[in-house]
Amino acid sequence: MKKTLVLSAALMTIVGLSSFAEERTLIDFSTLKADVAVYPPKQEGQESSDQEKPNQNSRTLMDYRKAAGASVSSDQKELMRSSLALGEWEVVLNSSARTVSSLAQSQVKEAPSKSFDTVMGVRVVFPTGAYNANAKIVPPFSIPAYEPYGELDENGVRQPKKEGEGEASGPKWQFESDNPSDKASPAFGLVKNVGTIKKVAVTTMGMNFPHALYVLLSDNDNVTRRYFMGYLGFDGWKTLEWNNPEYISEVRTREIRVFPIYPRGEPFVKFEGFQIARDAAHIGDDFIGYFKDVKIIYDKANLETERDIADEDVWGIIGRKENARQAGEMARFGNKQVNRYIERQKMAVEEDFTPTVTDSNSAAQSNGGQAANAK
Image 1: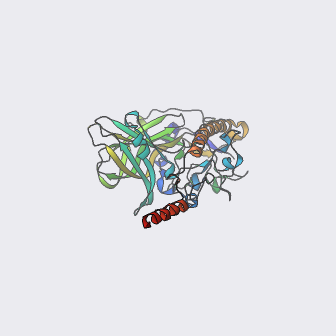
Image 2: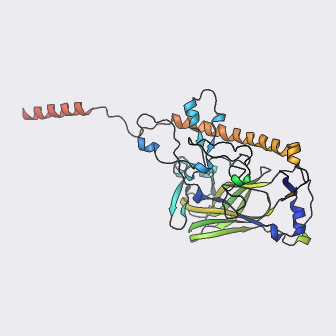
Image 3: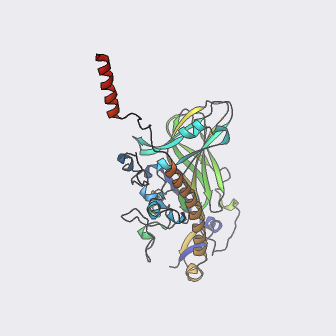
């Protein structure tokens, strides 16, 4: 392969900015429906129907059993998988909003929609007192940027891409879109080759709440930025936009910066979640919100062209860097999921106490009482 990343964003602007701007759907929540069942072993007192309902999304399913210790059995490791299924997303409350009841009731669910089939539904229980509070709606794990794409086998285990398979058979990375060359194909929280972001858009349903909405995005430098989208004080579906106030459309007024061609790597943007901010002067208690997708318009960071020498094939520098980052991502991801799996196994599954008086004893006592009354 001689196709490598060769030109920086600064050089790109000399050729012409508008011809290389991209619009991508960073994440579309209608693609994250639960379609596969992954459950721990059935416990005593648990109904069988509880194990049949799909709870994970097969396209974004991740295997974290490699992070488990030796004390975890092989059967348990087979079930250590998690995904971006909407029911797995979390609501993280700030300290002023974190009460026991708020933590128990704030959650994310699949919400059937007449317009979009399925969207993300969010419930946040804010405090009723007159003080500021906010909540973040975040994925169950930080979306990996260097996890290679692989198809699922019949057991639901993701398989590595076979040697010699190119981009034509699918995306290079797990959370890229299924067809990276198609702008209409939504990604699963990760877009590569992103330079300057020009616009961010989110499709959401307003419920006349006065709260502020932010979109959280991170980049290849592990910097998370917060984009103010507006207020949710409206009714119905609406697309809220953030426009970069420092974006320079005129090429001649841009600062030209030239970077080394190799081995710079490929910049990216990934979705870190939403933030809902409630002002102290506004109503508290329940907040209900719905979200369809998040889109971005951005400059390409690099152009692809044919090179006389395939630099990566000779040196392999980018590959080693990405492998190291991938190992770090999986270690952080796996430890958190293993601890949650163990905690879930320790949780009680009984809803009611076992009756102390059996049916036969009840019948005997009843018959004895009737006999006494007859006398």
